[in-house]
Image (cartoon, rainbow, N blue to C red; front, side):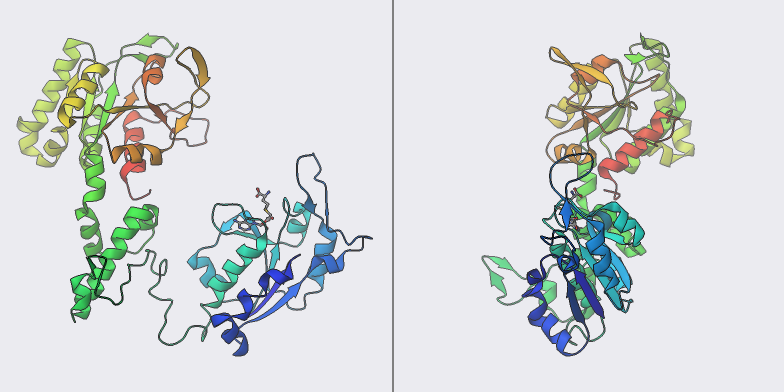
Length: 438
Ligand SMILES: C[S@@+](CC[C@H](N)C(=O)[O-])C[C@H]1O[C@@H](n2cnc3c(N)ncnc32)[C@H](O)[C@@H]1O
């Protein structure tokens, strides 16, 4: 494969392209490289290739003409790529796709980046490496070159294989061990010292699954998993243990009505069923349904009893299992006290809101709501219980948002219709906090 790299710093590539496997692959004719410096195509007196950005702001922008001429000089450009942090992320499957090409041309940006018109006019495909900004595209181009080159036939020795590596099967790779058998009091897992190929293969698969769940749970959404994999993941303590510290709390007071006034709304049968089913599915600590109205609490309790102790539970035990997680309560304070008594820890109160740009009072000041992403709340769940409070009517009253420790990032459809049922929001939020979508 031919790699042409357009760079203002060709010397950057000296070491990496001339040592170890890359040097051998060049000698064997598996890869070859051409380095083109756009400065050689500048017509300016001082060979400059950059200028100040239109619209102002710091830094310089690479001008289109020297890059255009540099690109025109490439005889066999193949697929043309610009390295950019905003580009499509380099992944193993993208590397595999690129390894099928005969030639790749990589344009390395510097300064604030490249004039957008050059990128459009040349049809450059933007590819990024990680969610961090580098000084220039050179280090990113090297990552791409290595990821692609090692997939080319003959690049890796017979004893090495890209097949079992991280990302190859949509999972992270299992850990590796070598001699000594014991190191700093840590022994190599026994199964790897035994001779059963089947047991070793299963251990490696499970270690891969466990590592992926712990580090990159969103990858599990697309990884091909069989029944044994799913059973193994279900049996892992991690998400279930986290879930047991999470309590849903559906407030029927104080919530807002259509006119934005604080009100009390009635219980909804569907909310009770579905939020209990969500709690059972994600193995939560439970779901509280809060209303200050005695008759509404009695009604709710009758419903829960029907599906747990009564005829409903006998006819449909699965539903009974879910509704057993439901509790009626008179106030949010009562919920917080009951969760504290049950878990032995003061819970964090995490509110939810469907609205962006909401102002709340924090101490003496009024502020725009700052949303907290699910990853932060997941971190809390590792140490302490969390009560996730959801509102009925037109959402939680400001006093609830103001007393909460955090307001979770809302579920946003980016459409103009913002009326997701609260039980659907509860399911989505539980999945964001505990599901394998990360
Ligand atoms: C300092 S960066 C410019 C960053 C740009 N202002 C932005 O915020 O996206 C200069 C050049 O480095 C390259 N670069 C920086 N980080 C990168 C990354 N993570 N992946 C790919 N290229 C990157 C790009 O070619 C970029 O034009």
